[in-house]
Image 1 (cartoon, rainbow, N blue to C red):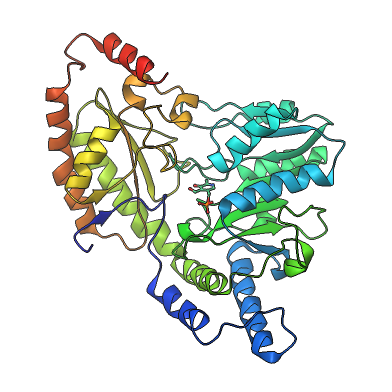
Image 2 (cartoon, protein in one colour):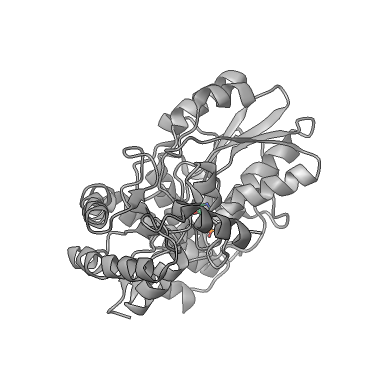
Length: 402
Ligand code: PLP
C-alpha cells in the first residue's frame, strides 16, 4: 500500500498508530462492560471518562455534554429527529441544499412524511445568504441544521452568525461538523451551537464511532432507545475500543491543529496552483478564502471525473469525485449543481483532500501525473472548448443524469 498517494481524507483517514496502540488492550484483555457492578468493568468506565474528556476538550465542551454515537450519520439523525420528537408541535426543519446525505436524505424523508422542510440556497462560491436564513425561520421551526464545512468543496459556513440568528428567534441550531473537527479550531461556546456532530474516521480514529455535543439543558429525545447508557440519551453497550480510539484521536488532533492549518494548507495551495497552471480550462470550486485548509475541488472542463479517477487510480493516486457516497453514479454532485457550476465543469470535478500524513512528494506525484491524463482524455473526447460542440457535451450529461 505504501506506493499509494492517498488524497481522499474527506472520505476517510488512516487510523493513527497512537490510536491503534491505545485501542489494542480493549480488543484483548480489557474487555469488561463499563456498566458492570464489579471493578473489572468499572475500570473500563474510567477509560470512557478519559475519552469523553478528550472529545470535549477538542471542541470546548463540558464532558457531560458529549454523547458517543456509532457514526456521524447517527449524530446527525439524533440531532434532527431528537429535536422534532422533543417539540412535537413544531413541524419545520431548515437546512441547506448542500448537506451530506446524513442530513439531506433524512430531511427529504421528513418532507415525504409531511414535515415542512426548507433548503437554503448557496451562491456560485457555495456560500449561504444570511437574510435567507433569517427569513426561513418561522415560529413552527423545530431545528435549523447547517453543516460547518462542506465535504465536497471544503466551503466553511458562518456558523456563529447563523447560531446568533437562531438564538434570537429561540430556535435550536445543529451543525454537522464532521468535516471541520480536527481541521479547524472549534469552540462550541464561541460558535453558539446547541448541537454539533463529529465522526471518528475523519480524524484518524476508526470507522463506526462518533459523538454528538448536546448543550447542557437542551431537551433531546434519544434515537436509539434501550438501556441507561450515555445517561439514557443513547442505548446500547458502548463501543469501548473505538471510544478509546476516538479519545486519543481528539487528543492528537488538538496537538496537530496548527500543523493541519499551516503545512497542509501549503500542500493544498501548491497542488491547486500547479494544476490550474498545467491543465488549461480548469477551475476551483468553492469560496477562495472560506474553505477548509485540506480540501481542493477542481473541475477539468469537458472530461468525465470518473475517467480521471480511474486513470489516477491506475497511477496509485486516490482522490474522489464529489462525496464517496455519490461517486459511482453519473449524476453530477448535488453540491456543485446547487452552486450553479455548469454541467461541462461539474462532470469533470475531482476532490483532493489532505491529512497531516501527506508530504510534498505526494503533491509532486499528482502534478506530474494528472496534467497528461487530462490532456489524453481531452484528445479522446469528441467535446471540448475548441471543438465548438460544448452544447453536445451538456446534452449528453443531461441524458446520463436521467
Ligand atoms: N457529514 C459529513 C459532512 C460527512 O462528510 C460525513 C461522511 O462522509 C458524514 C456526515 C457521515 O459520517 P459517518 O460516515 O461517520 O456516518
